[in-house]
Amino acid sequence: MATPGTATPTNRWFQLIMAIICMVMIANLQYGWTLFVSPINKAHGWAVADIQVAFAIFVALETWLTPFEGWLGDYLGPNTGPRVVIAAGGVFVAIGWILNSYAASLTALYVAAAVSGVGAGAIYATCVGNAVKWFPDRRGLAVGLTAAGFGAGAALTVIPIRDVIASSGYEAAFFWFGLVQGAIVFVLAWAMRAPLEGEAPKPTAVKVIQSARSFSPAEMLRTPTFWILYVMFVMVSASGLMATAQIALVAKDFGVANATLLGVATLSLALIIDNLANGAARPLFGWISDRIGRENTMAIAFGLGGVSYWLLGALGTSPVAFVVFAALIFLTWGEIFSLFPSTCTDTFGTKYGTANLSFLYTAKGASAFLVPLANIIKASTGSWHTVFVVTALMNFAVVILALFVLKPLRSYQIMAVGGRAVPAE
Image (cartoon, rainbow, N blue to C red):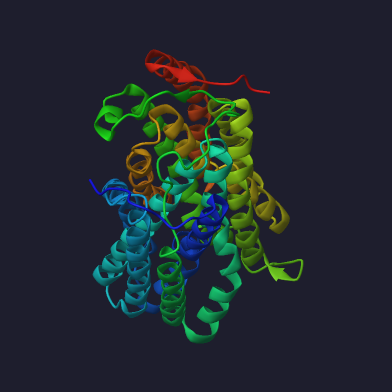
């Protein structure tokens, strides 16, 4: 393993800000994808379900290679690892979107999705891994702020991307946004690093239980706690990805996509608000979980999420209702990217933090292959109602798992190996 060596003095809040900016730069790879589906369909005549396979491939490669990328970042050491992995990620995301702009076949589209997915995963895993290491005392908040860059960042580019697509075609949007965003990540990467031993503050004010020792990835994978977390992540992530990938199609089928609301097309307004809600959810629920506990916060968030899915499916055919209920879905979904990483590091320690988080993050990749299922359900039933009922039930099931399975199991495991906690306020 690489030795830490010496590192340039840095401030952990500076490191957090750099990570957030990097996450903003890759946000529309996922959350802006919905804007490209119809233009690609119109240009090539490919079936929407076939086009959405590219989205599934992107999410799968964004997540499934992160155990290797996370391990590489840890192996290269705190000074070198984050810089190399994030810089390489910036190059890959630029190449991926540029390839999208030239894709003349579904195969080429899928290859481009795979390349951009590899890059996005390298950036995402390393930035989140840095956050959990630098902020053991405010883990939920720090991871939430980092993930918020990914969740809300696309709000900055929704209207510009739509404008470029309308004026110059989707190919130009892929090319220029990919090139600029990848270049910014590449430059920022060289200012980033992880903390040296003893550099991060001690978690003396922590309000949640934390493991007294670190589990290696192999040890973690042998625990039932990890697999309960994994199943929960898959269920909630699948429901959210169905919404993020299909929201433009849902708006079109509900007849509200181009209706004017507050002087803006309903779909554009919804996408902006959705991304802001998605981003805000991550630090908000992360901060709450630092105070009332991870599982209690999961129950609140996912319970509200289940209600939100049902409301959009039942009442979302007016512009105002569509914007409000879609925003509630994103508000109660985005927090998985702060709650699950925080819970994982609390449970399995920080030494192998980036690699362990990356194994858990592969659940998002598994869930991505359920996204085309939404199109199949919609095609067979003729409406989106059944899709939203299914996603609501998935969220309610996770509430039960959080309170009655994960909470006692995790508490028992942490206490068995020695744990620490300060009573919640």
